Image (tube, rainbow, N blue to C red):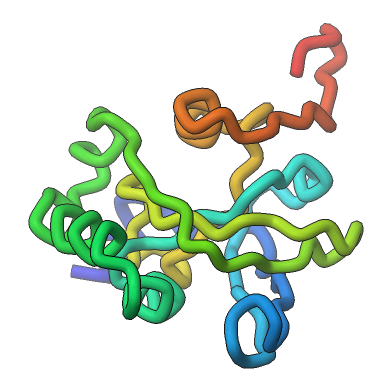
Length: 156
């Protein structure tokens, strides 16, 4: 199946970015790995989102019944990319934070139903100004939007 998917979809080209976190934020030191096909938008990241099955989601939900219920709801839903693309974007903040690797800014970690565990590492850097799904999510939850890339036509 993976070979068929690779031949059908093709291999994504991009880079891995690590968002560090420390003991104060998450209880241990480490880094959240994300894969991006748009490293040129890194400065526009305003939050990170993880899949319901991601270890950080599990950790954050330990003492949070609302987050536990949301994770269970996400796990019960469809994981087909086509379905995820068209469904309403939902999420909850985890209360955890990571550090932007270039600016040092604290970025909130959200559990989001549009992030798939089987794609990359189950986490995305959210760049709402330059990604439709991230924009829809950020608008819904009043998260910051930073435009950092302009096309030759002046659009973002």
